[in-house]
Structure formats: C-alpha cells, structure tokens
Image 1 (cartoon, rainbow, N blue to C red):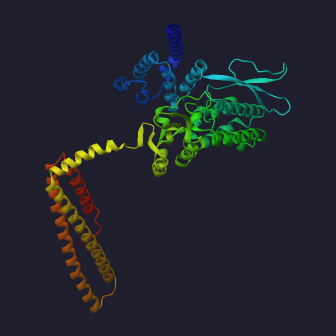
Image 2: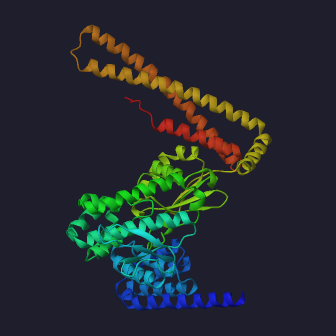
Image 3: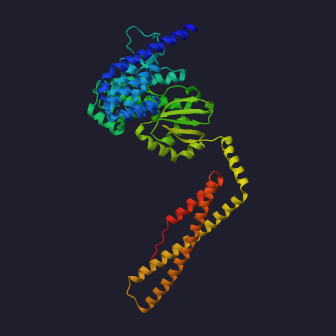
Length: 503
C-alpha cells in the first residue's frame, strides 16, 4: 500500500515537472506576445486557475502590458506547481481570445502529446480489396491474431470501463480511420474546406487559420465530434461529395442508432463521449442537466432526445454520471451562451416535466428545484409576521381591492377621454355648421367632466401611494413591506403609462 502511494507521489512529481517544462518552453513567447492580459486573467480567475488577489495585482499593473504579463505568468507557474492539469486549462483560456489562439493551440498540442495516457489501442485489420475494416483485438498490449502479412493499423481510443462502450468506441475509431485515409488520398482544396467549416462554425476560424494540410484540418473537425455526434464531419463529407467516405459515415450511424436505443444509461455512467484528444471544457462552456431519473429505467436515447428537443444543436454531450440523480454534462461554444440560455428558458416547462432538478449554463444556475422543507421554513417566518400584524394585513387587503377598483375606473375614463378627443379632432377638420358647433360645445363640456373625474381618481391613487410609502418605512423588515411595495410599484406603473391626452 505504501509502495503504491510512493509510486503515485513520484508520478505526480514527474507530471508537474513536465507541465512546468512545457510552460517554460513557451514562456519567452508568452511574455512578449500574450495579448489582453487583464481579460485573460479575469477568465482564469472565474475558472479557478488564479485567485482574486492575483487578478487585482494584474489589474493594478496597468497601463503597462509587459508588467501585467509578468504578474500573470508568475501566478500561472505557481498554479501549475499545485496542479499540473491547470496548464491545460490555461491553454484552453488562451484559445478563447483571437490574439492568443496560436499560443494556446501549441501549448495544448504539447500537453496532449505528453499526457496522453488516458487511452488504449485497438488493432484493426485492413483488407486490401475494399479498404473495409474488422476489429480483431481491443486489448492495450496484446497482439492481434492476424496472419503475418495482413496489414493492420493501431487506433487510439479513450479508456473506458464497459464492453458496450468499447464496442461503440471501436466502431467510431474504424470510421474515423477510413474517412481520414480516403480524404488524405484525394483531398478537396484546402481553402475551400476552411471556408466551408468557418461558415458552419465561425468559432473554428482561428484554429483553422493555423492548419496547413488536410490532416490538421481533420484533427480540428474530429475534436468537434463525439461518439454520438458526428454531424460536422458528416456535413463536410456530404458537401464535398466524397462518396467513398459516405459509406463509412452511414454504417457508423446505423451502429450508433442501435447503440443509443438499446444501451441503458447505467452502462454509460462516467464514460466519455468526446473523441480522444479533446480538451476538457471550461466552466464557461459547460452546461449541466440534473434529472430525477433512475439509470436502469432509461436508455441513452432518452437523454439524447430531451437534450436535442430543448437545446437544439447548440450543445454536445460529454459524459453522464450519477449522484443522487442523473447528471448530464454538455459543452457548447462560449459565444452561443446567450442563445443557449434563451432557448433553454423557452423550453424550461418541457425539461421540468421530464424530471429536471437543476439546470446550469456556464457560471449561471438557470433553474433549481427547491425541496419542500426549503420552501416551508421561509413561509413559517412569513406567517408568523402576518399573525403578529393582523390589522395591518387586513388593511393591505382593503388597499389592494381599492387600488384595483380605482385602476379599472381610471382606465375606463381614459378610454372615454380618448374617444372624445378623437371626435373633437374630426369635427375641427370639417367645415362647421351651426349644428356641428353645438355638437362640439357639448363634446367639450363632456370632455371637461371626464377630465375632472379622471384627475380626481389620480389624486386618490396618489394619496394611496403616500400611505403605502409610510407603511413601507414602518414595516421595512416585515412581509407586509414586500406586499405594500409591490402594490406601490403597480400604481406607479399605471400612472406612468397613462395614454390619455390632456388639453
């Protein structure tokens, strides 16, 4: 036991040393080229990489950008020494800013190459006749029982626990291998591919600008896909009419459909749906759906369906885990945060009917189901306050009813006033006969009466406002304050939004 602990401790030290070495390699360029250090520091603080004190020091170093960089980079070193994986978070944050995409991308690349142990290798046989594939072995180290001259290829896939997940990952890896091989053999024009992908997802433009060949472009596309979402890759194949590759896309979609409809959520818990090499999403690009479900009672398709109906194509599922309920973690492009919040808010009723307990987008909690006891406690306090002020509560009710009656009367009088004003304007634009003049005089008298009645009602409402204001000062900490304040705001809005025209 002690030997294992010592080995783990040694491994952690080696990883920290490697992460620091990667950072130091890029430090000279970071200290010269890192743009907008304050904005980068703000996001790093929100993501938990640096503290608020560090952020304050970066901000206080203004207006000297070199000084801001120096303070920020010194803090990053300290963070990496504490937790080496924060280097990856730092790289992801850099990729959020156009001027820092290149810096972030090369750090991500070096990190992935150094810390890629969360994978295993499958052996795939490549028959020479039609380039179809057949999985022979999914072991990490065991050799496949193939004939000596049979061509094979090793494909890395994420480490997983269940055989069912191994199966779908293997099919995914085979599909990717064949699509890559076909596209590399006769690639469409690189600039055309870049332009098309940028039209599909503008957020990819900075990363695509660094790609110089089809292999690098496909790597960007694959990181946008997952085991259960290959839409971007499929769209690319269809747009450029790569018929041979379409065959493998179609085959994989059929396998995936069966997988989603037959595999229970239980078998998907804690498994990663994202492709190998994808960086962990930042919190600002993460959404979580918490459902009051039993994993044995639902299929993977149930989750896909509810996420698709309520979020459209804005999110992709990353993994599912179980706490007191089912927690579905998804990712989305940061620039779509507002659109996603709006769409989820519009579909909140459907999510609640489906057993939603909590919904978060980025740093915001959109909705959370309260437990009964959480609601009961404040209600008991409110009831106690109301019982202590029975006459005050009765008076509030009377004021509320009076305000409603006066408001309705005032509204009717304003309509009548507007109608008469319109009639006067019509009469004024016509050639007046004696009869018209008599009618106009009558109308003016009627208008005067209506205006006086309206003004009287306004005065009554104003007196009520003063009374409410006194109540608010008297019971500033009580439940009655909230009620009276609400009525006062209603009356103010009525008086502010009057449509009547006074002459």
